[in-house]
Length: 120
Image (cartoon, rainbow, N blue to C red; front, side, top):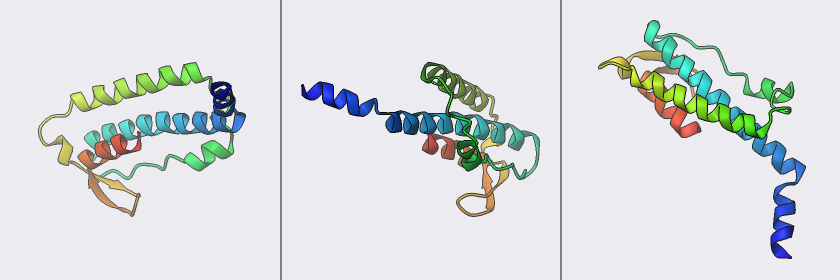
C-alpha cells in the first residue's frame, strides 16, 4: 500500500532526528531572542552572548527531547515571546542592540523581534 510506504519513510530515524533538532533549535531561538529583547529593554546597546547552536547539537542536547514535551515547550516559548512584546512601550522597538548576525552591527529591538518571526 502506497500510504504505508510513505508512513514508514516519514518515521525513519534520520527524519525524526532532523525534525527533533529543528524544533529544538526553534524553541531555543524563540527563548534566546526573547531574552535579548528583555536585555535590550534594560540596557543601552547590549552585546548579547551567542546561542551556541552548533555546540547544542554536538553535545547531543536535543537527542533525548520527547516530541510531545517539545511541542508544549514551543507553545510556551511562543506565549512568552508574545507576552514580552505586549509590554513594549512607544519607543521601545527602536532601542539599539548589538547583533552579530548576519554581520556585526547595531540593530533595533524591532529587528530582533522580526528576526525571531523569520527564524521560527
